[in-house]
Amino acid sequence: MSGCLITFEGGEGVGKSTQIKHLEQKLRNDGHDVLTTREPGGTPAAEKIRVLLSDPEHGGKWSDHAELLLMFVARAEHIKDVINPALNAGKVILCDRYIDSTRVYQGHLGNISFDFITTLEQHIIGQTVPHLTFLLDLSADEAMKRVHARGASDHYDHGDRAFYKKLRDGFLQIAAQEERIKTINGLQDEASIAAQIYTQAKEHLHEHV
Ligand code: TMP
Image (cartoon, rainbow, N blue to C red):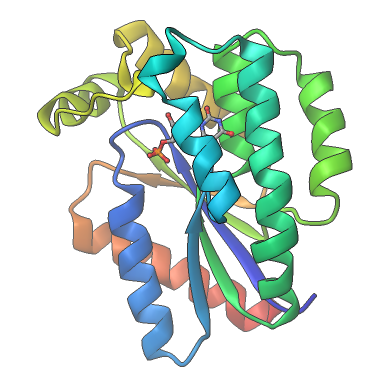
């Protein structure tokens, strides 16, 4: 595989999608073939799973195991139909959430053991590990403020402060263990964040692609 998989991670309201748009534009200007995608989602079937996951008619929260498995069903399709073909075609893929979200939401916040998640990763992700990951980090208070300001209403966003704190701690813990994850202070202004992400992505692409 000759392309590059760059993932964006972080809690709710940290500004991932805005930053993905900035990086997409900058890399396109440099002549890269860029594909943006997201999880859960990225294929028609996986997008249906995304809808199912937040379906109010489901009547409540999915069990932790059901949620985990639905994430991996969506991911398996996404890898097979979108990510691996794009990597093989030499594209730069910018993916809004990927495996680290599962580790944090289903592992740290849910009640799923890391061993089980790792086993699923080994079987379903295989070699399709991100080359580079940007973690947009915000304090629990700031993230909550932003989510409430945008009036988000799907079931994922119904967290109290403890939820946001645990979410942030989960991502920071993973970032401390993985060299590929670059933590970015999400409190900075949009343009400064975009510039830092671009610099690090360019460096990586220069060295590895
Ligand atoms: P977002 O992509 O719009 O931020 O929201 C997707 C939601 O899905 C978010 O609350 C995190 C959640 N999620 C998981 O719980 N596990 C996962 O593996 C992924 C990719 C997302």
